[in-house]
Length: 362
Image (cartoon, rainbow, N blue to C red; front, side):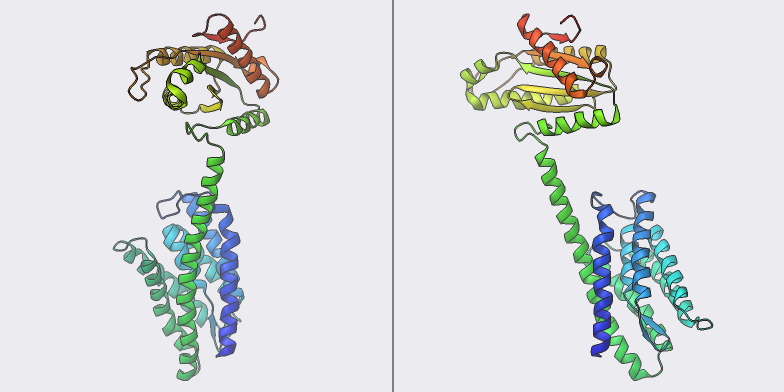
């Protein structure tokens, strides 16, 4: 019994270690389910199939039986990827079982195939009446155990031998299923937390727009791939007087309301960010300079009509100065921003509340 326990423990360790490394390619996927894209479910099937092959190749042999945790991998594949993932994993299990089966001793191989197919059919029926919970996952593991025990009995020499193996098998299958489910759930939470922290590091805390670091990363990405784009630099006119009149809380309200206006006016593919202080940047991929200037005018007019409200003060207005430039006016994306900044400076020097496009005559 102790020897069986130790061998199962090695199989269990192989399962968890394989899951950890196999999960890495999927760490950015928010949710995996039978409704996920087919390509994703195929990938899940190949990952679970690979793990199954490793488990089968390291099976514990008793008489004609091969004992391992392959059913945990199969249930996991079906649970997350449905028939597509489960079918691929089944084929991998049968192929691996065939590879380790001596010539002429195909009873175990045949039973393996029947068990996998029966489990998938039963699981597909059960899923119609079940929710996506730990209980349902363990029920599927239990169904797999129920199908495996008769096959295990047929392949062992004596009833006492069967009981000895079955006890360890049931314990480790249920334990393996429970730990696998909890492990995947906690791993998903961990990666979601890491992703959230990464997003927060690229987000301006006041406006929830992209911060300067995110904007700089986007500009570097444009440079790397040679993307054409235009940029608007938006600056609030006389923002210091807003802070002096309404306090910094009032200034923050203006910044937040302006951020909403910029997002509303900008196209979906635009990257809108706060560059610092009262200065905002709108990156417009595949947008000619004339269209960028037109958008800048739309933003300027919308802001001029906007009623800014803070506390008990009467509604007030602010105006914007905007500089525009495009990637065909510079060699690098950061030079484009510099030229837009020069245009913004000209807008401020010539009366404010206007949009100025960069030109070589500026």
